[in-house]
Image (cartoon, rainbow, N blue to C red):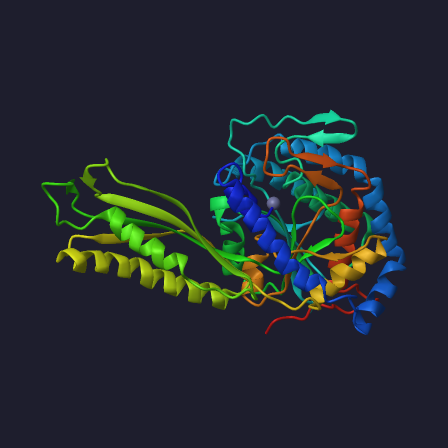
Length: 447
Ligand SMILES: [Zn+2]
């Protein structure tokens, strides 16, 4: 799920703490908006839906399907799926989707597996996806251990739970014969974690221009609704010069000196508190020896913002600085030998949508309808970032149950009442795409 944890865990504890604190601060601003108000239209739709016999049947089915869902969650977990190596798990997931009533199940060139649950027509098209990848390397032990009612395994929650919850929702559609107006694409997607850089959803939205809304099922929980995307751009900057002896070659430009010029300027950058925008030079390395003019030196920079505009402005300033530092170092020594290489190593767009956006409203009403207390989640770095940044409404929600230690070998999942996760998502989906003869779609079609 939130990719900032995967990047920092075990490498920069301080950075991780800083990241969490910053995210929580941004969140408190959202939460301070006191009570959440549902629109009359959403209220009415959910009054109708939560008492509808077919919908009730689907909800009851999901509860009864709890053990099967858990069993599938464990099976999925045992198939390793590191970033860029999701193929085996994707192939397995395709087989699991096959008997569940979808049309045209296929794998696209990026490795996403999906199929369509058609509606009665003229409704919106909703994409419901769970990411296939984990943060763990192939060698890690993915066998599931059970202790005191909890399941332990790397990836047992993130995202075996989301993948299993999606399958249970599909079975509920089959069992209840709920007929929606809008179409629903169900998908196991690649590339959510770390350097996967959202390649799965990027491909989906590139190739399917007709998607009107997006729900990502990620990890555990049945209350949280993530609707804001923290964008991040990451760069690796490398200065390269001629290098030479510190004494005999004195007068040549130095890569470490150029790097120092850049960092001094970066350190003085100013960014807004709201929308929260941050930066840090996470790592530096370079130089040859104490008595050498450095031939090479590099830094890694992380920039984040809840606003794409602020992120791009910060990035533009950063670019000026790193190029300027090479130029200054050349001017200082009357040289043209210092060069700078700029490499983008991470690109997740930021996305903002109002807390009362219809997807959030539908998820809120659905959470209440299953007896849970909805919460607006802190801005995340999830698959939803991309559609939100494109102006397509999107949320990331948990697949039920509780979890801890995600992205660590000690990851655990508590399955108590975990069916509430797929139940509320089942309801959210139906409200958004509409139920034939009962409620019109809450999700508007894009032009
Ligand atoms: Zn995840």
